[in-house]
Length: 281
Image (cartoon, rainbow, N blue to C red; front, side, top):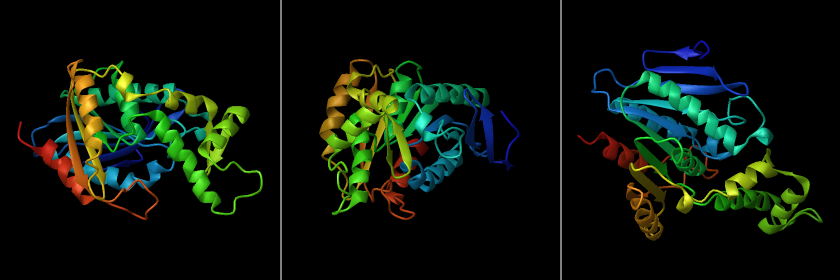
Protein backbone atom coordinates (compact mmCIF):
# COMPACT_ATOMS: atom_id res chain seq x y z
CA UNK A 1 0.00 0.00 0.00
CA UNK A 2 1.25 3.49 -0.81
CA UNK A 3 1.05 6.36 1.68
CA UNK A 4 -2.52 7.55 2.34
CA UNK A 5 -3.68 10.53 0.30
CA UNK A 6 -6.22 11.38 2.99
CA UNK A 7 -6.17 9.99 6.49
CA UNK A 8 -8.64 10.68 9.29
CA UNK A 9 -9.47 8.55 12.33
CA UNK A 10 -12.20 6.89 10.27
CA UNK A 11 -11.30 7.15 6.55
CA UNK A 12 -8.19 6.51 4.47
CA UNK A 13 -7.87 7.26 0.73
CA UNK A 14 -4.83 5.78 -1.00
CA UNK A 15 -3.43 3.96 -4.02
CA UNK A 16 -2.13 0.42 -3.66
CA UNK A 17 0.14 -1.46 -6.01
CA UNK A 18 -1.47 -4.07 -8.22
CA UNK A 19 -0.66 -5.75 -11.51
CA UNK A 20 -0.65 -3.67 -13.61
CA UNK A 21 -0.13 -0.30 -11.93
CA UNK A 22 -2.05 1.04 -8.96
CA UNK A 23 -5.65 1.15 -7.76
CA UNK A 24 -7.42 3.99 -5.99
CA UNK A 25 -9.09 2.86 -2.76
CA UNK A 26 -11.09 4.20 0.13
CA UNK A 27 -11.13 2.47 3.52
CA UNK A 28 -13.79 3.22 6.14
CA UNK A 29 -12.79 2.07 9.62
CA UNK A 30 -15.58 0.68 11.80
CA UNK A 31 -16.97 2.87 14.55
CA UNK A 32 -14.71 2.15 17.54
CA UNK A 33 -17.66 2.61 19.90
CA UNK A 34 -19.50 -0.33 18.35
CA UNK A 35 -18.71 -4.04 18.45
CA UNK A 36 -16.90 -4.90 15.20
CA UNK A 37 -19.18 -6.92 12.95
CA UNK A 38 -16.73 -7.81 10.17
CA UNK A 39 -15.72 -6.33 6.83
CA UNK A 40 -17.37 -5.46 3.51
CA UNK A 41 -15.65 -5.18 0.11
CA UNK A 42 -17.54 -2.99 -2.37
CA UNK A 43 -17.64 -3.97 -6.07
CA UNK A 44 -18.68 -1.01 -8.21
CA UNK A 45 -20.83 -1.00 -11.38
CA UNK A 46 -19.85 -0.76 -15.05
CA UNK A 47 -18.54 2.27 -16.97
CA UNK A 48 -20.33 5.56 -16.25
CA UNK A 49 -22.62 3.91 -13.68
CA UNK A 50 -19.59 3.93 -11.37
CA UNK A 51 -19.64 7.73 -11.33
CA UNK A 52 -23.43 8.02 -11.17
CA UNK A 53 -23.59 5.82 -8.09
CA UNK A 54 -20.59 7.10 -6.14
CA UNK A 55 -22.72 9.15 -3.78
CA UNK A 56 -25.04 6.28 -2.89
CA UNK A 57 -22.08 3.95 -2.37
CA UNK A 58 -20.37 6.47 -0.12
CA UNK A 59 -23.52 7.09 1.92
CA UNK A 60 -24.03 3.37 2.48
CA UNK A 61 -20.33 2.80 3.24
CA UNK A 62 -20.56 5.42 5.97
CA UNK A 63 -23.66 3.72 7.37
CA UNK A 64 -21.97 0.33 7.36
CA UNK A 65 -18.96 1.81 9.17
CA UNK A 66 -21.23 3.43 11.75
CA UNK A 67 -22.78 0.00 12.38
CA UNK A 68 -19.38 -1.54 13.10
CA UNK A 69 -18.23 -2.80 9.68
CA UNK A 70 -14.89 -2.12 8.04
CA UNK A 71 -15.62 -1.10 4.43
CA UNK A 72 -13.20 -1.12 1.50
CA UNK A 73 -14.02 0.60 -1.80
CA UNK A 74 -11.73 0.04 -4.79
CA UNK A 75 -11.74 1.46 -8.32
CA UNK A 76 -10.93 -1.52 -10.53
CA UNK A 77 -8.32 -1.41 -13.29
CA UNK A 78 -9.22 1.06 -16.03
CA UNK A 79 -12.05 2.51 -13.95
CA UNK A 80 -12.53 5.70 -11.95
CA UNK A 81 -9.30 7.05 -10.50
CA UNK A 82 -7.29 3.86 -10.89
CA UNK A 83 -4.60 3.45 -13.54
CA UNK A 84 -5.21 2.11 -17.02
CA UNK A 85 -7.61 2.90 -19.83
CA UNK A 86 -11.08 1.40 -19.87
CA UNK A 87 -10.22 -0.07 -23.28
CA UNK A 88 -7.61 -2.27 -21.55
CA UNK A 89 -9.93 -3.45 -18.76
CA UNK A 90 -10.55 -7.18 -18.60
CA UNK A 91 -12.83 -9.36 -16.45
CA UNK A 92 -9.94 -11.51 -15.16
CA UNK A 93 -7.94 -8.39 -14.16
CA UNK A 94 -10.94 -7.14 -12.20
CA UNK A 95 -11.20 -10.46 -10.36
CA UNK A 96 -7.49 -10.31 -9.55
CA UNK A 97 -8.03 -6.79 -8.19
CA UNK A 98 -10.75 -8.11 -5.90
CA UNK A 99 -8.42 -10.85 -4.70
CA UNK A 100 -5.74 -8.31 -3.74
CA UNK A 101 -8.33 -6.07 -2.07
CA UNK A 102 -9.83 -8.99 -0.16
CA UNK A 103 -6.42 -10.03 1.14
CA UNK A 104 -5.72 -6.47 2.26
CA UNK A 105 -9.10 -6.21 3.98
CA UNK A 106 -8.68 -9.51 5.79
CA UNK A 107 -5.41 -8.13 7.13
CA UNK A 108 -7.40 -5.29 8.72
CA UNK A 109 -10.37 -7.26 10.04
CA UNK A 110 -10.51 -10.64 11.74
CA UNK A 111 -14.29 -10.90 11.35
CA UNK A 112 -16.40 -12.31 8.51
CA UNK A 113 -15.97 -10.68 5.10
CA UNK A 114 -18.82 -9.95 2.71
CA UNK A 115 -18.91 -8.72 -0.88
CA UNK A 116 -21.24 -5.85 -1.76
CA UNK A 117 -21.87 -5.53 -5.49
CA UNK A 118 -23.90 -2.93 -7.37
CA UNK A 119 -25.33 -3.59 -10.86
CA UNK A 120 -22.63 -5.42 -12.88
CA UNK A 121 -20.54 -5.33 -9.71
CA UNK A 122 -23.08 -7.75 -8.24
CA UNK A 123 -22.48 -10.26 -11.01
CA UNK A 124 -18.72 -9.75 -10.73
CA UNK A 125 -18.96 -10.35 -6.98
CA UNK A 126 -20.88 -13.60 -7.55
CA UNK A 127 -18.37 -14.78 -10.15
CA UNK A 128 -15.44 -13.92 -7.89
CA UNK A 129 -17.08 -15.68 -4.93
CA UNK A 130 -17.53 -18.86 -6.99
CA UNK A 131 -13.77 -19.43 -6.75
CA UNK A 132 -12.89 -17.41 -3.63
CA UNK A 133 -15.26 -18.22 -0.75
CA UNK A 134 -16.61 -15.33 1.32
CA UNK A 135 -18.96 -15.13 4.29
CA UNK A 136 -21.80 -13.30 2.60
CA UNK A 137 -22.86 -11.36 -0.50
CA UNK A 138 -24.89 -8.14 -0.75
CA UNK A 139 -26.46 -7.40 -4.13
CA UNK A 140 -27.80 -3.98 -5.06
CA UNK A 141 -29.93 -4.07 -8.25
CA UNK A 142 -27.64 -6.69 -9.83
CA UNK A 143 -27.45 -7.77 -13.42
CA UNK A 144 -27.90 -11.53 -13.33
CA UNK A 145 -26.83 -11.96 -16.95
CA UNK A 146 -23.81 -10.16 -18.29
CA UNK A 147 -25.34 -9.95 -21.74
CA UNK A 148 -28.11 -7.75 -20.34
CA UNK A 149 -25.52 -5.32 -19.01
CA UNK A 150 -23.72 -5.04 -22.35
CA UNK A 151 -27.03 -4.54 -24.16
CA UNK A 152 -27.97 -1.81 -21.67
CA UNK A 153 -24.58 -0.16 -22.23
CA UNK A 154 -24.96 -0.26 -26.04
CA UNK A 155 -28.49 1.14 -25.90
CA UNK A 156 -27.04 4.29 -24.37
CA UNK A 157 -25.28 4.86 -27.69
CA UNK A 158 -28.58 4.53 -29.55
CA UNK A 159 -30.19 7.01 -27.16
CA UNK A 160 -27.32 9.44 -27.65
CA UNK A 161 -27.77 9.28 -31.44
CA UNK A 162 -31.35 10.53 -31.08
CA UNK A 163 -33.97 10.39 -33.81
CA UNK A 164 -31.58 11.52 -36.55
CA UNK A 165 -28.45 9.36 -36.34
CA UNK A 166 -25.61 9.96 -38.82
CA UNK A 167 -26.03 8.07 -42.12
CA UNK A 168 -24.71 4.55 -41.94
CA UNK A 169 -24.49 4.45 -38.14
CA UNK A 170 -25.72 1.29 -36.35
CA UNK A 171 -29.36 1.58 -35.29
CA UNK A 172 -29.82 -1.45 -33.05
CA UNK A 173 -27.93 -3.28 -30.32
CA UNK A 174 -27.45 -6.14 -32.77
CA UNK A 175 -25.81 -3.76 -35.26
CA UNK A 176 -23.62 -2.29 -32.53
CA UNK A 177 -22.60 -5.78 -31.48
CA UNK A 178 -21.71 -6.60 -35.07
CA UNK A 179 -19.57 -3.45 -35.22
CA UNK A 180 -17.83 -4.46 -31.98
CA UNK A 181 -17.16 -7.97 -33.29
CA UNK A 182 -15.76 -6.66 -36.57
CA UNK A 183 -13.65 -3.80 -35.22
CA UNK A 184 -12.62 -5.17 -31.82
CA UNK A 185 -13.78 -2.08 -29.93
CA UNK A 186 -16.66 0.36 -29.75
CA UNK A 187 -16.93 3.71 -27.98
CA UNK A 188 -20.05 4.55 -26.00
CA UNK A 189 -20.26 7.74 -23.97
CA UNK A 190 -16.50 8.12 -23.95
CA UNK A 191 -15.85 4.52 -22.90
CA UNK A 192 -14.04 2.29 -25.40
CA UNK A 193 -15.36 -1.22 -24.80
CA UNK A 194 -13.02 -3.96 -25.99
CA UNK A 195 -14.40 -7.07 -27.64
CA UNK A 196 -12.56 -9.27 -25.11
CA UNK A 197 -14.23 -7.61 -22.13
CA UNK A 198 -17.66 -7.69 -23.76
CA UNK A 199 -17.29 -11.41 -24.50
CA UNK A 200 -16.28 -12.17 -20.92
CA UNK A 201 -19.19 -10.18 -19.49
CA UNK A 202 -21.62 -11.79 -21.97
CA UNK A 203 -20.49 -15.24 -20.87
CA UNK A 204 -21.24 -14.60 -17.20
CA UNK A 205 -24.63 -15.88 -16.03
CA UNK A 206 -25.55 -15.99 -12.35
CA UNK A 207 -27.59 -19.18 -12.81
CA UNK A 208 -24.48 -21.11 -13.85
CA UNK A 209 -22.20 -19.79 -11.10
CA UNK A 210 -21.12 -22.03 -8.22
CA UNK A 211 -21.92 -19.55 -5.47
CA UNK A 212 -20.53 -20.34 -2.01
CA UNK A 213 -22.77 -21.63 0.80
CA UNK A 214 -23.37 -18.25 2.41
CA UNK A 215 -26.18 -15.72 2.99
CA UNK A 216 -27.04 -13.60 -0.06
CA UNK A 217 -29.13 -10.44 0.36
CA UNK A 218 -30.58 -9.18 -2.91
CA UNK A 219 -31.93 -5.60 -2.80
CA UNK A 220 -33.97 -4.44 -5.80
CA UNK A 221 -34.98 -0.79 -6.00
CA UNK A 222 -37.13 1.06 -8.47
CA UNK A 223 -40.30 3.09 -8.60
CA UNK A 224 -42.42 1.27 -7.64
CA UNK A 225 -40.51 -1.60 -6.05
CA UNK A 226 -39.75 -4.21 -8.75
CA UNK A 227 -41.69 -7.11 -7.29
CA UNK A 228 -41.67 -8.71 -10.74
CA UNK A 229 -38.04 -9.61 -10.01
CA UNK A 230 -39.21 -11.72 -7.10
CA UNK A 231 -39.90 -14.62 -9.50
CA UNK A 232 -36.33 -14.50 -10.78
CA UNK A 233 -35.06 -14.33 -7.22
CA UNK A 234 -37.16 -17.37 -6.32
CA UNK A 235 -35.67 -19.41 -9.17
CA UNK A 236 -32.14 -18.46 -8.16
CA UNK A 237 -32.95 -19.15 -4.53
CA UNK A 238 -33.83 -22.72 -5.44
CA UNK A 239 -30.75 -23.15 -7.63
CA UNK A 240 -28.32 -21.61 -5.17
CA UNK A 241 -30.01 -23.34 -2.26
CA UNK A 242 -28.84 -26.64 -3.70
CA UNK A 243 -25.30 -25.37 -3.08
CA UNK A 244 -26.02 -24.29 0.49
CA UNK A 245 -26.60 -20.58 -0.14
CA UNK A 246 -29.58 -18.77 1.36
CA UNK A 247 -31.15 -15.88 -0.55
CA UNK A 248 -33.31 -13.12 0.87
CA UNK A 249 -34.94 -10.79 -1.65
CA UNK A 250 -35.73 -7.22 -0.55
CA UNK A 251 -37.94 -5.09 -2.83
CA UNK A 252 -37.51 -1.36 -2.13
CA UNK A 253 -39.41 1.65 -3.48
CA UNK A 254 -37.08 4.31 -4.83
CA UNK A 255 -35.55 6.00 -7.86
CA UNK A 256 -33.14 4.16 -10.20
CA UNK A 257 -30.13 6.12 -8.96
CA UNK A 258 -27.76 4.44 -11.45
CA UNK A 259 -29.45 6.25 -14.34
CA UNK A 260 -28.18 9.66 -15.55
CA UNK A 261 -30.08 11.68 -12.95
CA UNK A 262 -28.07 14.37 -11.20
CA UNK A 263 -27.21 13.34 -7.64
CA UNK A 264 -30.03 10.82 -7.47
CA UNK A 265 -30.40 9.14 -4.10
CA UNK A 266 -32.55 6.30 -2.81
CA UNK A 267 -33.03 6.81 0.93
CA UNK A 268 -35.30 3.77 1.14
CA UNK A 269 -32.51 1.50 -0.10
CA UNK A 270 -30.07 2.98 2.41
CA UNK A 271 -32.60 2.48 5.19
CA UNK A 272 -33.49 -1.10 4.16
CA UNK A 273 -29.86 -2.18 3.83
CA UNK A 274 -28.87 -0.60 7.13
CA UNK A 275 -31.84 -2.21 8.88
CA UNK A 276 -30.81 -5.68 7.71
CA UNK A 277 -27.14 -5.32 8.57
CA UNK A 278 -27.69 -3.29 11.71
CA UNK A 279 -29.98 -5.87 13.28
CA UNK A 280 -28.78 -7.56 16.42
CA UNK A 281 -27.20 -10.97 15.75
